[in-house]
Image 1 (tube, rainbow, N blue to C red):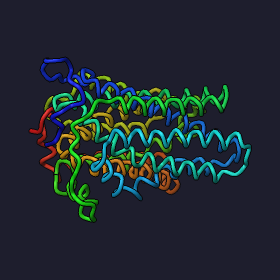
Image 2 (cartoon, rainbow, N blue to C red):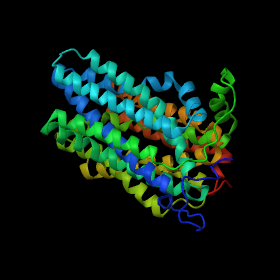
Image 3 (cartoon, helix red, strand yellow):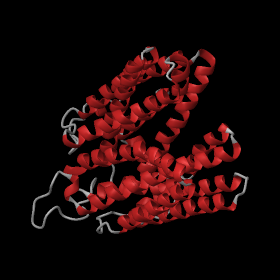
Amino acid sequence: MTVSDAPAGAPLSGAPQSDRAFDYPGFRYYWVGRFLLVFAIQVLSVSVGWQIYDQTRDPFLLGLVGLVQFLPAPVLVLVTGSVADRYNRQFIMAACMAVEGLCALALLTILHSGTTQVWPVFAVLFVFGIARAFMGPAVQSLLANLVPQSALANAIALNSSSFQVATIVGPTAGGLLYGVSSELSYSVSILFFICAGVLTLMIPKTGQRSTSQPVSTEALFAGFRYIWSQPIVLGALSLDMVAVMLGGATALLPVFARDILDVGPWGLGALRSAVGVGALLMSLWLVNNPVRDHAGMTMFAAVGVYGLAIVVFGLSTLVWLSVLALIVMGAADMVSVFIRQTLIQLKTPDELRGRVSAVNMTFIGASNELGEFRAGSMAAGFGAVPAVLIGGVGALMTAALWARLFPELRTVRHLDRMG
């Protein structure tokens, strides 16, 4: 079974299955809860950044904020996915949200203590990262338990749109709240973590199929083995991962804003927002206009457009063209992400979905980190423009190469069913 036969709540009593995810009560609770969760994380991230920089004036420490939160994911990848497949995913999510809320409370306490040492903050962020590592596979896996197969593509598009809105609005709200009062920003994030946890617990019982396989090395590595044995899943995951790793243009936006486009801080903000705006607009389009046919070829085409947009951005010396290129880049990436997530959910048995999701999220997270390192190191050696152009051309070549290496992925047509 790829998707649960018992979605969390029927659309209407006695009514046929709907292909609209919002018709299912369980998904509605999930959608609102996840929006509040992502919003809370964004507000907290901005608050922590301001707090650390206010205390130290050391930009290097700002870079460690994200790294400390990411490290638990690859370290615990074998455990977090197995837990999501073995235990109730709702309770895992709710428990992790409670831990994250306690971490926000601990950060607020540290702020009130007046200490000038930053190690307590990073210690709390490491615990926060552990909670996120366990929650990620549960969040991704639970989605397919809430709606039938016919509504999964719509659910993923809606989920992506709420994520993009939260990641665009959340940092701005966090900055405004912190400007009013640091206590207010932390308090809002704590409140949202609590609300997200309550909504998660309100989701009706799902038809999750937990694994009965005994805990063993074989069980822990089952996610890796399954991905390797499925050309469609392996191709979709690795294509997106390599393209993201090569397309590290966003890491160099400060260089382009200051030295090439000469737009200053306000322009940097516009450039950073452009990628998110493109992704949001495309996710909203996909809600009502999902990919109905030739999904595999559409994914390859989207990665190609993504690479081409990066090349245009790298060559541009016009602000409007650079912003437009970044909007197209974000939109193309959203198409690729949407198709990849849907294919992985459709092809993965429910009892393996947590472990596969853990591997997927770890690889994508690592590719973001490696992509920024690739762009920064190449920019130091060859300059920012060549670094971006090499990444864009590399993404184009990846799309062409993967289309030849994974013909099964190229011939996938429908996202409401396999075939």
